[in-house]
Image (tube, rainbow, N blue to C red):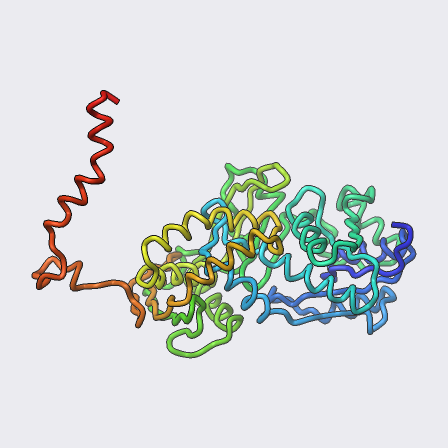
Length: 404
């Protein structure tokens, strides 16, 4: 790593990445290019520019990119087509952001002639794996610097002391012990650590930032519709919207009705269990709606196969293999299944829940004529079921005859 002359750093402008910026300059004696992604985290990003300039980064080496539309269109929506939930619950809000950040890091490294990229993920978590697998998949010869795996700043006190020794401003709210850490983007907010580390203790109310307490949500339900075209949401209540605009609008509705809270103990890729609290208000509504439209437009075989593939697909994203060929193979199959996933879903939002209460589609496979309890005018001959059952029972009867 001694030949590194220029590094592209995934930079938030916070204490950790500001220390990393200076540490790279001091330790490697290299130029640092900062990249700050606007993924809809809801924070003002211009302070990151000012802080990078204060630390000697020239204007042409400071990148602040609005990636919200690309994030939802090219990463969130494809994932949602698969109905992906890691370990059956987690909507992968942090996981799905990492490949996009890595993609842009590599693009900037190419543009600026950088030798390496750097990130602020710790050596205990999943993000280090996600960042680096993505980076190597896109640029196999890139060098990756992960300061948390190299330096001896093993506590917040040591981090603050190092910052002060190198004239890095330390906000007042960073001087006390942080009660928990958060990560946010347009899809979700995750919180973990400190007050959340005991899985027996209920999440304190002050941890939640994107949803009202469901108990305090409106007493009257709200009904909405989402229109889908080829498996992607295109309109809310009849109004056409871009992917990011639609998700942002659903976030507002989810916040209001306390939808999308998840308290989860999950299995990290690096081997340990961790407890986190996730808020995915718009994503939870959207995911429910997508399954709703699939229920009348997907054939049973395709729908059930998708459900069998989903855990593997979700695990690939969670573990950082977005750019791996197996994820792309699964995506091709999933996208093929969505060709006729068109129509409208009506949902009822009420005190923490998003329930599908109606669905319609020009490509619907639902036949009221076949399923009716009334006279079906010969659409279905009930006598056919007898032979169907006998053939399916044949092996069971043979087993029973052998006493097995």
